[in-house]
Image (tube, rainbow, N blue to C red; front, side, top):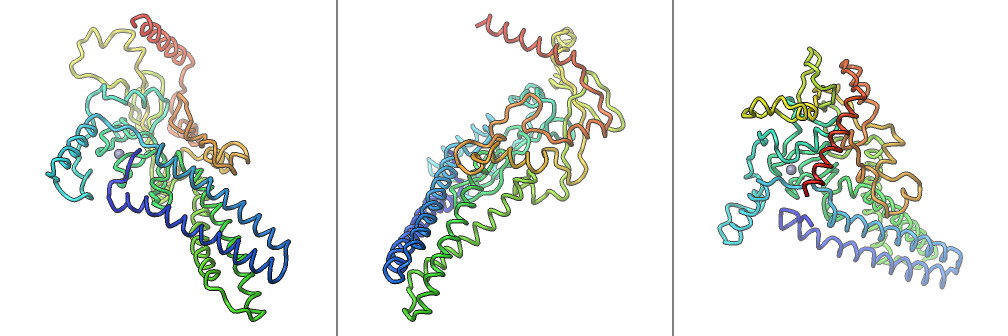
Length: 405
Ligand SMILES: [Zn+2]
């Protein structure tokens, strides 16, 4: 579990579920007792209307609660944070120790701003291989992946540093205390389901209370304060969740997160795209070869055919402003988050396909822009043989590994 950095947010995360439970409790009492039982059944009496409202009310209440628990638990247990680098772990341990000894170096809010770790210059930097074993990844101008100076680690594609958690979160969308933390890759689907069901639930409460109030006024029975309170609360949450649902569905369809969207107009992605081993730089692109050269490597090691075989060359290219390399088209974008069939879209059970995506090519499924970029920059095709050689080498290494243990 990764807790929020500031004490106020940690309290908010504990208090909000109680506030929401109170609101749902009030709405249940008003809709069941005051509206359906007291008014529609006793006074009117319209049994069919009462039964219909009760059925709709409990149907959406159940779906709302299920998706709330799902999104809340996912955010607490599996928020999709990337592992911390060794330096960050040490620094944070020291920080904790300092706090424990009462020699706090500043306010709660300043923690984390103290890490000024620049990118790891070690060619064998831990975690680097994970990037260059793919065919494409987001990189800096020097061809190395992006670095998070607070987590002291290489940032995987589409990860964003969340200042509230002090961690990098995969496909971070936004920090939402209403659902207990950061909405990202692992929880976005359940978040959409939760806001959708809450909006629908609020609509049922609004319609039931408005009909009840209207007929009471028309028949001169006066107004019921509790019914008005339930109407006001459901109107507030209804408007709020409806807006969130509309925004989130839009992001899902264009395959952008809230964080991406804020800069989507003028963002340029820089990508390292694998090209045949030994490809030279051209005026169109520069290249980088992994593993990065070691300054102190003795000559005989550098020339070993085995090492040569294990090298991978990447061209460094930029997208045009506003292009999204992960845009698969609206339907596939939607499916990558919500699941492959309508049952998955509706039920908060299975994780998003993009959260369990495993592929040798890239961290996330690449859209058609990937092949377009290869053509646009005239990148040479990858020979089939190279693939086979690398596969063979990997098998050899695996066999050697199993033999030696
Ligand atoms: Zn980070």
